[in-house]
Image 1: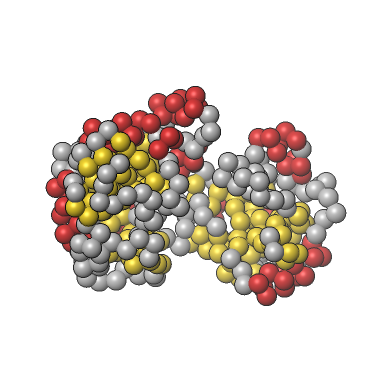
Image 2: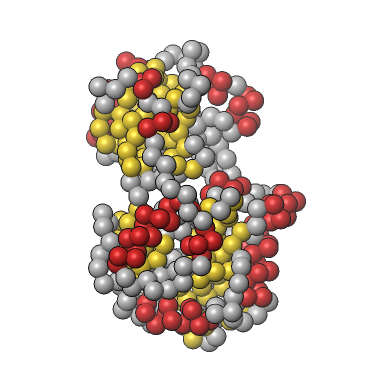
Length: 356
């Protein structure tokens, strides 16, 4: 591969803000796998955010990129999978599989798309030091003839329109808006952009904890919500505590610790069948490798409020953030009914949004 920008490249990142800043270029924030695409003739490589190659997992996308991109280029974008008119991150996760036969099957069953939002090199020229405004124009020109499954993300310079996107596009599975300064060069690995994501709160039952890797302190709290049938479902974890708080939580929750999972709402997770099926919270997977993910059952008697961005398949899409204890709430009142559902919005309308 002979390109002016070669793999691996760490993608430029964004820092979180509470509101969109004025006077920038605004784009939807896609919920997929960040990927840097390198094409040099027939050679195509997909690099992940960590620099590891994703190429083998998306053979159908490699072929599409080979026929739809300029002969020599480097693009920054997002690999996504759609289902039912919206993004489906769970289906995307399934695409990362060690078996070639499974990879080929999923390439047909749940084909991926690539949404481009930056151009790092074209032909023999690096655009890394070129301002964002000019890179956007070059991107639109380079991909003007591209069609599905290769797309260019919509972008606008109008703050009011970006705020509309923030409200509307969540219904298609997107999770916010990214703002980019017009004069910004491409800065690998630097949080030089701004992102605004949705945040909601929910009252959840604390039903377990996972010890921290550093010792006998809390690593994360396992959260549950009751479904319509009265079953406590695992919906995610709450983490990111200062070390002093982790120690305090371990002492605070000690009276709720159970000697075994017997009688716990999630006691079936201790069975070999459940472990083999990956039904225990945060169980070992191809993402976690050999990490110790054992958990400690707690009597489901305490309620806490957490902040989250959105749900995916009945669980929090990302790690929830602790807000406060809710001693005024009873555990059985913590149900899915409290969760706010975004208004549905067709993904095709997002991809056809163009530029403002």
